[in-house]
Structure formats: C-alpha cells, structure tokens
Image (cartoon, rainbow, N blue to C red):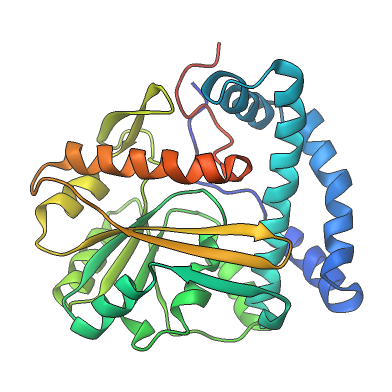
Length: 292
C-alpha cells in the first residue's frame, strides 16, 4: 500500500516560482506553465498517476484511454488550485468571484457562539476556505486543523507576502499536543475544522464504503464529531471556472454517539460532491489500498 506520509505537494520553492509569475506576468502566465507541469507529473509521478488512474478507471468506471486523459486534467486543475491559493494568499482576491451555498449555517454557528465541528476533504481547494471564513464576523473563532508537515514553512512564507487573517491553525504533532488545542477551542465555543479523508499510519481508523469500495478514514474526527453535543457541518470549496469558486456547506445527519453513522453520512456527502466535480479528487495515493 502507498500510505500518505503527511506531506502535500508544493514546497516553498514552488510557491516562490508561482508568486514571481503571478506578480510579474499575471495569473494566466502561471496557468500556462501548468500544461507542462501537469504532463511532467503524468509521466514521472508514478505513484500519484497510478492512484489517480485507479480512481477514474476503477471507481468512476471510465475507459483506460479516457482515464489517462482525466489524470492529466486532474493534475492541471490541481495546479490551478495551488496557483489560486497563492494568488488569494497574496491579497489578490479581486481576481476571483465566490458564492456561498449553505454558508449561513456557519454564520449562525458563529453568532450563537456554541462551537461546532466542520469536516471537509482533500477535494477542491479547501485550503482557501480561511479566506471565505475571514470575511465572516467573529472569524477569529475558527480553527483549521492541518496535518501537512510542511505547513509551517509555507505559512511563514505566504504570511511574508500576504494579508494577515484572523484564523487560527492547529498543526497535528506527533506528541499529540494538538488534541489539547482542539479540546480548548471547543471548550471556548469555537469552530474546529478537520479534513476527514487522510490519516497517519498507526492511527485508529474506521472503514466505510466510498465509490463502491471500502476505505479507511481517521477515527478521531468522527468519534469526536459524534460524541460532542455540537453541530457537525460538511464543507467543500470547489473551483467552478478559472475565476469562480463555490463554497458548499451541509449539516450532517447522524445518530448521536455513533461515529460509524457520521462517517457514512460523510462518505455519502463526498460521493455527492465528486459526482459534480470528478476532476477535483486530489488524494494521489493508494486511498482504497487496492492498487496491485
């Protein structure tokens, strides 16, 4: 099995290159570079390409030839989301338009100050969610939990060239100190946002069917969400056109204290969003543990 190692693609050097292109030649110039970058990854990112091909061919049922083309397009769209994230992080938000679908649910939670859990996935461009949230009142009460080991270096660089925001970040650490930060945030009636589709090897997992086959998910997120007496929302930030994003928010329906039922509700929600945006599945590893 190709286990996710906690690192997302895109080191600081890559961000600097795209920032240079965006600031000097515009966003479109950075997009043009992606035609070559996506082709490079298609040929030389062996594990990522195999995983993406499996997703399109085995899980979505496309032909082999069609799946190869879709892998390339997925890499291209993934690159666009990275460029968009860098652009927005640098304060160039007027290049994009946004719309909320169900966003009032988050606003209501912030107004009520009762706390809550938001669960997303590595689908679309969730990493720009903080710029949606930052425009809301009391956005300082939202905490984003990130598992990227490169998060600190990238965040420091982006902060050096970007507008500051009010959001808090909780970085997953091996000493489990993040557990105390999460509990403190919820005790203070703040919102805590997780991604529910990745886990570290050795962590406790729950299994549920996704796109016709069982997969493993981090148990902690769903145990926490099912046992606390706070609302749970599913949130996705999806790229619709080159300059337009769509934020979806849906309230989770599940039996209290039933983590498996919450997970099932989550996988059904993920399937729903993937049917609308099949190219925006960005888990480039053996997610279903089924690649021979």
